[in-house]
Every structure is written in C-alpha cells, then in structure tokens.
Length: 194
Image 1 (cartoon, rainbow, N blue to C red):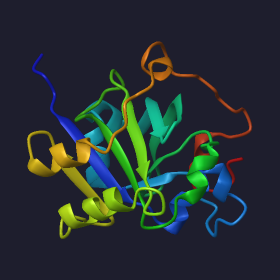
Image 2: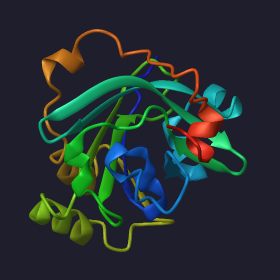
Image 3: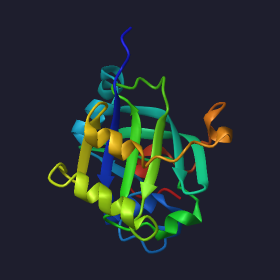
Image 4: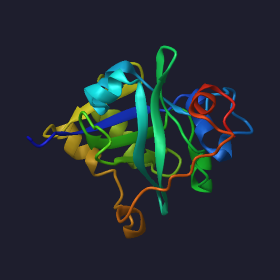
C-alpha cells in the first residue's frame, strides 16, 4: 500500500464551535457541542468507507499548551453537516479561545481509523504572533472558514510548526474509550451534550 499523504485542516472557530469546551458551555450561544467540518474536509479526512458510513469514532490526540487528552471522538454527519464531537474538552486553558481562533487537525488523508488525528488550538490571546502568521499565510485560502493544506506545500510546512510535541503519555498506548451513556453522538453534536 502506498504511503498516504499528510494533511492539515485549519478551521477558524465560529461562536457555535465553542460549545465543545467546558469553559464556554455556560456562555455559548449555540447548543452545538462539536466543531463543524465541511463536506470537502470530511472527504479528505475520512476514507471512502467511513465517508459512506457517514462517520466513525476516531483516535484524537488533543494538545493545547501544556494540556492534552487522547480519546475516541466522533466525526460524523448529522443532517447535512459534518461535525467533530465527543466528550467536552475540560482543559481550562481553552477558556481563552474565542471565535476566529483556530483549530488545527493533522492526520493522513483518507484516514480509515488506523491513524490518530492530532488536534491543537491556536488562540490570538495567548499565541498572538502564531495566530497572526496563520492569518497572513492563509489569506485567501479559506473556504467556509476552512483551509486544507497538503504535505509538501510551503504553507503545510509552516503550519506544521504550530503543532506542539505530543507528550509521551499521550503518544504511547490507546485512546481513552470514555463513552458517556447520557451523551450520544447525535445529542453531542446537535445540541444537548453535557
């Protein structure tokens, strides 16, 4: 099997995306408890099999500053929209994130669930220069608040530098399989996740 190319998805967070963070749940104007993804992003991130199934649980390593988690998270289609949902992100460091900040998702294209997704956040309040650099380097490349960068491009290499090292306690082993029986995927992404 040939080596699949890496991709980075850069999503400018909308107000509705902030409900995935526990720190924002009290003030979130939307009941959405997930990060919105576009159909073109789903086509790039997911294998044809998972795309046809309208999603799956994926191994997601999330690192923000010194905080991190590794869990199985849902990527799926709810109605006409694709979402990256799952358990709320508990880190208080995420309280500083706001709309127009970025989530960066890095993995192999056409992921069939056999590779993790790396997810990190870049906030202009704490990473002002990095945030400004992403804005400047991706100007004109966003479609529906999202840019898809392929391995080998100058922008891919520049944005790849924004990913922090994955702590060894997250890199080794398996993701937590924390399924909240009261927090089904449809509810988590559609609105009443905990």
